[in-house]
Amino acid sequence: MTIAAAIATTRTLVKSASHVREIAQGLDTLWTAQENQEKEKKEPKPKSRMQQVINIRAKEGDEALDDTTSLGSVAADVLEQEQVARNLKALEREIEAKWGKGTFKKIQLERSKRIAEKHKRQREKKEEQMRKAEAEKSFWVKFALETLKAIAVVGFIVGGVYGLIMLKASQ
Picture (tube, rainbow, N blue to C red):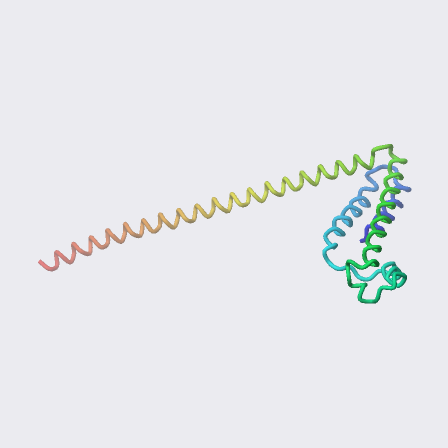
């Protein structure tokens, strides 16, 4: 889902919601879309209609559509960011009008805290798994070493007994 669609959906939810919990799904979708957009920035975007119009008006050719430094590409990116920023600000105003000043910032702050806690738990879980794997590896190394020692001792004893038997048989 695009950021614009997520904002529009959340704004619709805000109008009919009686509690902040009722818009949680919309806000989560919005922030997920924002995170996904930042990840997708590395990939080239398809030509938008706005970019095509700007390229035509700037008298840039079709090759400028693939160029990320062309006036059309840069203008389309900037205008899209501005539109998203305006829509996000409108959503913020609607939430604060319905549930009080600072609610949107509190929601963002709480979300960032929870994300940080989630990452911390994941990191701790990963470290614990690594410790367990290391302990298991250490166990098997010790087990193999002790097994080799036992085989060596048994081999030495068997060799000694065999040597004694051969010595006695030669007399």
